[in-house]
Length: 297
Image 1 (cartoon, rainbow, N blue to C red):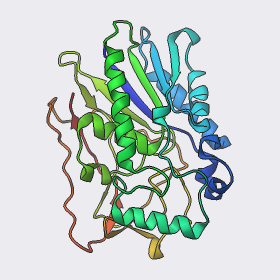
Image 2 (cartoon, rainbow, N blue to C red; image 1 turned 180 degrees about the vertical axis):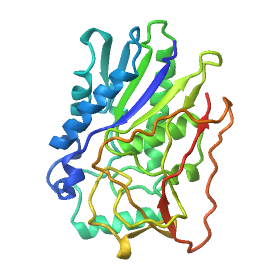
Image 3 (cartoon, rainbow, N blue to C red; image 1 turned 90 degrees about the vertical axis):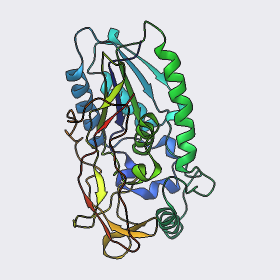
Image 4 (cartoon, rainbow, N blue to C red; image 1 turned 90 degrees about the horizontal axis):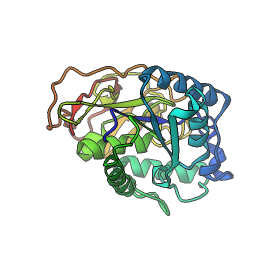
């Protein structure tokens, strides 16, 4: 039985969100939450509890990284012990950056190159491309569809993972284009992405409003789209490059999760309602919060 809700949650603030240099000495999978990250995860657990109906049961799938497991542990404390079960899923791990990261100059070069080439197709040296992550997310979704065939599958599915993974999961589920994926801003720490099932059609509607990059002037602050919240790799004037186009951006990667999960206005349909942005050569792309509403399976 398909769950009535599928909820993706990015982990709470990690030590690497505060100090990216620890990637040079601590393996990515061993990076833990900060105290703020713990507090965010506890609040996320309370929020999840508020979304549940009395009869709901919950299935957690959790990335094996320490920061996601800690987020899950904090969230699960808000729920009665007998109403949830958990499973550690390696396919939900963060994009592989190739073991320990190099010095700042090397990482700056890689990130500039990736931004110019495109986040989806660029393969990090000795690591993964976004397309590689998409492929393992695809196999995970196949596993989910088989699991849904069980009449005893819980009524709510919660996936505790990473920002890039969450966006790629939704991209794969709703059949978004690469351009649509590239236009989306990253999730904030412990932000929810909620998909709700239509009981009549048995298909899911995306309830969450995604923030989107667009042509609106805003102060240029750092918001890395992988997992690092710092400002060490900004280009001059707070700008970066995406597919050959400069852009500025602003977001609070270490703040509270966003309360932007409201039902969209669009009607139920199998068709995508997300429109790709057309970007002209050398056009400066500035961050703006926009709404993307999607209906699908």
